[in-house]
Length: 171
Image (cartoon, rainbow, N blue to C red):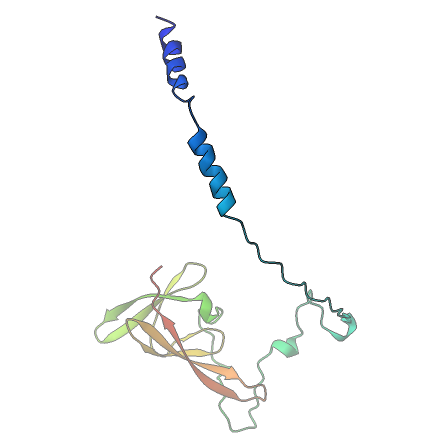
């Protein structure tokens, strides 16, 4: 009785031994017919030396000076200017690409946008509120998107308006 499983295994393995000439013929014909064609490698580009002169450039390990990061406002010119005395909103520390529209809420005739920040907090925003790094003011809220008017500095002390949309995101 103990030898029955061993005997069955031996019988099953003998079925695996047999004529393999058809298999060997198939492998040899396949290898003969299908020759791999590998295209030649592209020529490597010639190395061009760049002389790095650190004394002429700002160190990438030191934060930029305050003059480079401050918003330049020229009040003597009669052009579009942001209100820098206005208190910043809670979502004005996030870039627009770090914010996602998650949905809307409706109360009477007012539509509120639900906006999620990159740290997974969800905020309710309405028309006239600010978000984004460039003084973005919400101009319109629809169930599909939020229309934002941003003020972009032009470098000469004036600012230009730019329209952006924050679209509804499902995931």
